[in-house]
Image 1 (spheres, rainbow, N blue to C red):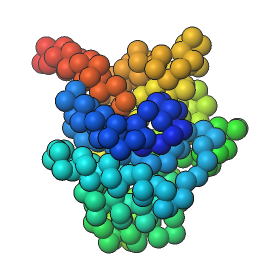
Image 2 (cartoon, rainbow, N blue to C red; image 1 turned 90 degrees about the vertical axis):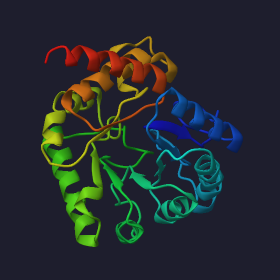
Image 3 (cartoon, helix red, strand yellow; image 1 turned 180 degrees about the horizontal axis):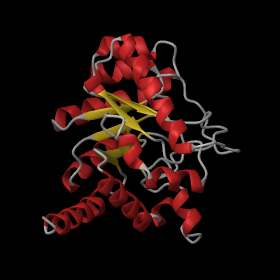
Length: 263
């Protein structure tokens, strides 16, 4: 899954793709590099990010989705917490809803997801983007993240979302310390055991800087991003959400070829 941030304040690219033409061109470039689907977001959810109005978010993402839909048949995901934004995106040509709040951030989210009938990605986040990294705490981070995601999946199914339409994301970097993130990455098998497809977003995340203090800029974290992605692949995750599609696809191809040699 290639990331296209149509925002002025994304942690990873700082607004480079806010202009519609730039966002469309970037999305098509990611497809050329090997992206199987694109994730379009019009609101940054980095630590400390400010909320964006529904109208502003729709104005950012709809022209990009419309332009991409005219140029490619690859699936497009909308990364949003807001039901109205998701609905506008689906009407524009998106076919997947990726929600960092696991359909809890908007009272209309569960019913809207059921009515739209599209696949949904339910992510774990402790707190809100503005405060989530202030002092995250868990008794057992793996058990608590799994329990929360099962609860949200069950609520989605009660609302009318099909089980086969649900994927889960542990939310690396969303209300978690370095050790929380590493523990989750070391126990992705527990998430896989829940019986849903797993989406993993580790690309350019700040936890990599915790292991390599020199990686102060998101673009300095390619090596760590690929290492974490390969750990996810080994654990059997179904989708990797990445900014650097070409290098990640190459790393996966080499890893898969080596693994094939074990047979």
